[in-house]
Image 1 (cartoon, rainbow, N blue to C red):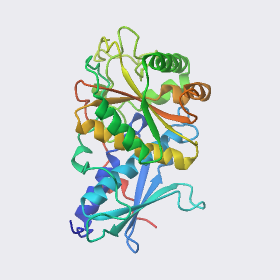
Image 2 (image 1 turned 90 degrees about the vertical axis):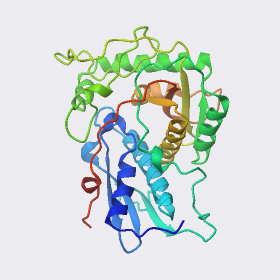
Image 3 (image 1 turned 180 degrees about the vertical axis):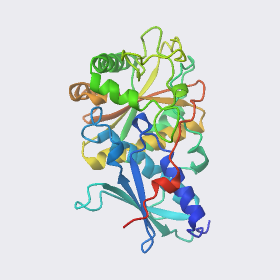
Length: 333
């Protein structure tokens, strides 16, 4: 495929793909800038949409930016260029998390920096977080293998937890939920991102129910805050009895590893979506330093857990809003 001309319409499609990535509380904590001289897109942190209490180190923000970088890679390749990525290119600009240069692909169609995956461009907009109960149908091993290979391509590790490990991970997640319920600042922060209007945050319809059995501790965005509960909140429902939890980890825990983890996460999520597998992210225990440390399974492999991914078959999650490409594109220099 010959590269398209990078006009305003194509640029808008590239940015729209990037902002379709998942982010904690759907804060979309990123901005983009085009360097026309080098035909390079910059991915920058939008610190005004950082989560001060749940994500004080900016790890979740950086993972989200990594997911956006992967979407950019998919979109750039879809339109015929070779995406050349640099992570944290300048120490003097800590908000500049990554650059994606639109290079001319080789004549045989195999770019030097090309991505080892099928074209997932159309899947980007079909991927939604599903906070609903899943069925008891198990994921085929071949799909789990595909997700594992996708993570490995980005320098990360992904594996499905066995039943004993799953129970342990869910206990840690439940403990994180209990702690958050007693932290007014964190509760107020998450509640502030429940928004039924505007391009950011999570609409009420996308919050999902709580597990009536208490087996799967889904995030309770409202918590016990006064007047936070509403008549339209979904009633509790019975979730799957044997949830599939995939663990995403990296060997190190630097900002570059967070960015790689985000790319691995989005690659796995898009592949899962292409197989009609739904996903939700259990991030709660990662928001408490001691619980995050406890997530690491030293018997499996040394490393740092970056995300717990609940996978299964069930309803497609509702779409959440996104900021427009024009708003996300910073035209200043």
